[in-house]
Length: 506
Image 1 (tube, rainbow, N blue to C red):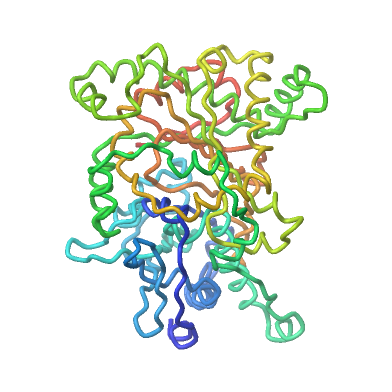
Image 2 (cartoon, rainbow, N blue to C red):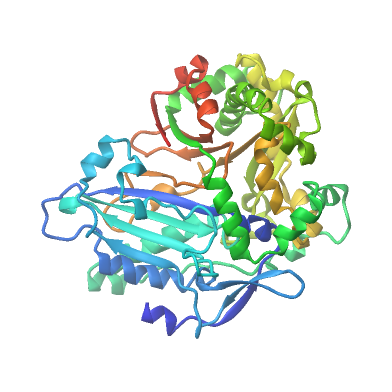
């Protein structure tokens, strides 16, 4: 740590409007590593190497060691002061764990098997202690299994600091440094540690923003509709206070995390079948097909659960004050939102876009009528929906990004909308794909992870599409829904025919 604190430069990094909107979220990731030689006297993934490499990588991500501040104009910024740093939480432990790697592997990597303080309960950006008003920017917990059998790394970072791409970039840099540090000295002299460039300045791409006001920008700036004084009050709370309120609310609701593995061949065959119904010149991606299929499955799963919920007295009361809840049940549609990484779409004019670590995966939304989504997943029905998804993703181009000036510079005050999710009128679904992120490149010198998945998080009614282990191939679909909706998903026979492995955890 001393090498970091003595070398880091003090700096202020202002966040944009989109970062601020993400300040109520964290990005939790879980990495599992198996020691194929547990009987070896050498420590698996040496603790000293990992710690030293961590602080070297942190020098290139100083934003992870600052305090969240708000100026008099309600603009959030990160204050990195070398004389008063807000260091990430970093722990490496074996003392409290008598669990073997094989036991956790046999359980399907069930997080409930881990010590309660290491399960990753930092999905909400809230203060750690009761009397602590400061929020830690990141948490990194390393757990070593009994008999040198393997290592579990839980990593969580505030979403306002980096997005998923940026966080995975940090994990890969940390691993790259650790792997290089374990090379013989003569090898390190011949092959120095590669240099990398990481940009955290939110104004780095301001030149791509148009000064002209567009209809799209005006819509985004004013969406979603505010909740008047309630929302403004919550927005006026310090980040720590807002985090506490959201944390208490979200933890009071019960949701189920589930994972479904679908083989590559199954999805390729399905895509080829659906492709026959595509318009000329359109080629569907695997993500188009996955998103179309899971949208149909989740629409059906949520329908009965939400209709039953709307009959409850509390839900009726919430619907009276919730602007989203003024439609009749028969008018409900699906609000489908996809997180689209803009970086590859602007790199022709700005090759350095791939070096930007801030939030650059924008949600592209579409409202779908029930006749498009509440259908059986035939090839024809999937093609109709896949085409809409394909066009939605394709539209997230440089021109789209150029129209976001007002959105990126706005002062958000709609945090209260998170407290009214249960009484929404439309069915809501967020789909985020990590299939292009190099999760399985995170090699600390002892091989790639046996498994990578999302940790406990606060986003509900969400689907994450993760890459499966390279030796297995295919995709892992992670869902988070209420117990009732999860049961409906599992009972969907068409969906389960695609799946060859399934796990569900509370």
